[in-house]
Image (cartoon, rainbow, N blue to C red; front, top):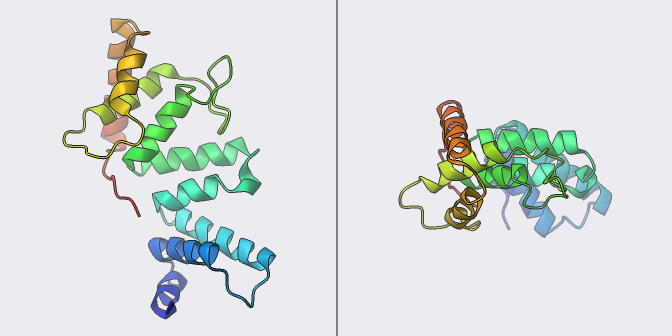
Length: 178
């Protein structure tokens, strides 16, 4: 593949190009590089892309195997990814807050987020209000319906207020997928 222009764009700091370079090398490593060099190059490209504000890079970087026990780093990038307006990132963050992959206290085991069911429910409710949403890999509507059965009307209203506050500061702007 001819990656000349992609590499030039990445060298200027273009976040999407940096992500695509990481993806390219992850899928087809250059024969002249060792696996360690390639791993470092991919990680560096992802970090630069994440710092450049590209949500898919934030998710991939936070979930690199070497970060598995670093809950502070994972949480930092999960929140930044959600704040960037990616609908699916907000859904993942909300489900973590609701303890979908949680311990007995509903604290998330993958990211270490402490359970915050009202905020999580509110964010999921916010996503459920998007009209015309065709692709929903998480069945947000179904999750909202199931969770609402365990909440009082007052809790639901509090969660909706939290969601409105979130949306005023970090509007849901994208369902863009690579």
